[in-house]
Each structure stands twice: as C-alpha cells, then as structure tokens.
Length: 230
Image (tube, rainbow, N blue to C red; front, side, top):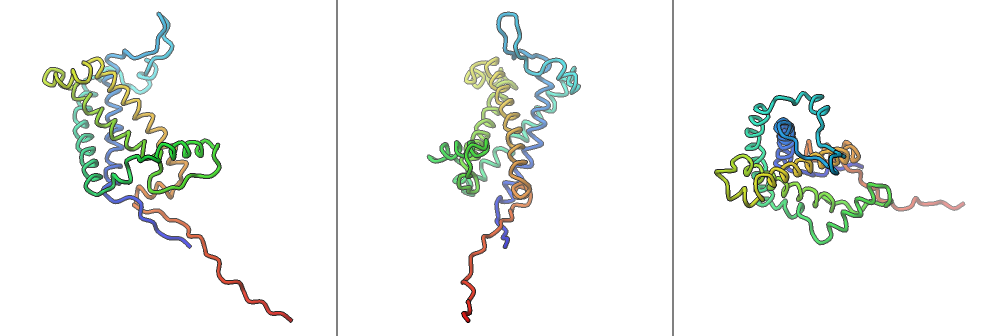
C-alpha cells in the first residue's frame, strides 16, 4: 500500500526555486567583481600555499575584464535576493513554519546522529520528521547568512552613505572579507545540499517540486488462517 504525504506548501517551494537561480547569479556576478582585486590567499612568507580562484580558473570561465558587467548583475539581483528572503522569513513567521525550522534543544544531538548515519558509521537512521536536526541547523544558518550577506553587501555598495553600517561591519576591508567568506559558505552549502538530494532520491526531490511524497505503508498482519485437523 502507498499513501501520499503532503510535505512542502506552495509558498515554500516558490521561495526555494526562486532563490536557487538568484543566488547562483549572485555568486557568478560576485566572481566577476572579485577578479578585479583578488587579495585572499593562504601564504607563509613569500610562499603562497593556496589562492582562491587562481588565474587558470578565472580564464577557464572567461571571467576576465568583466567588472562592470559583474557589478550590474550583482546590484540588480541583490534586490531580488533581498525581497525573496524577506518574503520567506515573513511567511515562516506568519504561517508557523518556523516551529518546524528553528533548532531546538534536541537538534544538535540529532544532527550528530544524522552525520554518523550519512558517513555509514551509524546503522540506523534517527527518527525523521519534516526536517531533521541537521536540516534545522543548516536552514537556519542559511537565513542568518543571508542577513549577513545583505548587511555586508550594503556596506560595500554604499560605504560613504552607510558609513555607520560599514563601521559596524568592522570597516570596508573587514566587510569585504566577511562577504567573501559568506559566499564560500553558500558554495559549500550548495555542494552538500545537492549531494544530499541525490542521496535521498527522487521521492524527496519530488516533495520540493510537487509538494508531496509517496510513502509505503506497512501492511498489518491479518488474523491467522484457520487450520483444519483431520
């Protein structure tokens, strides 16, 4: 027996699928801007151990000499990113979805159990509700990261007009570093999120597309068949 289980309301699905391409464009256009000044690297003395986005990477994606284009895309889509994020937060507050989303006192322990299960160390999966402990922590962190990206982005966008905000972010250079670190956080989240979706399978993906999943019901054992003695 199979049954249909409603998973995600229409609004949540819309916010999710709008945010995905918008955030992708923000990261892509951010790379176009970053190419003009690339200060971030891990270095000991004069030896560079690691450099974010080296020249071969920039050239392979044809990101060179496109600063003005990157800024144009970035400053347009930042408003779409902000609007979609604000509407999402308002919806979760007004609809009560926040109760399923925010971490509780059991979330960190559950997240550790989920991690052990995903790594194959723990054999049995922890009880799964709409969001497990790891998902609650990750999705809440993404919201906070979005707030951080907006504040640091505004500090970079208008450092003179919003001098107070820029100072609050630690100054222009610190705001730029934080903005960059948050972007790398999104990239890491993207990679893990896509791997988890692939691991979860089609049924889980369908839940975010159509709003429902199909689950198998365990058949209850019926009464024993009568026996005839001869």
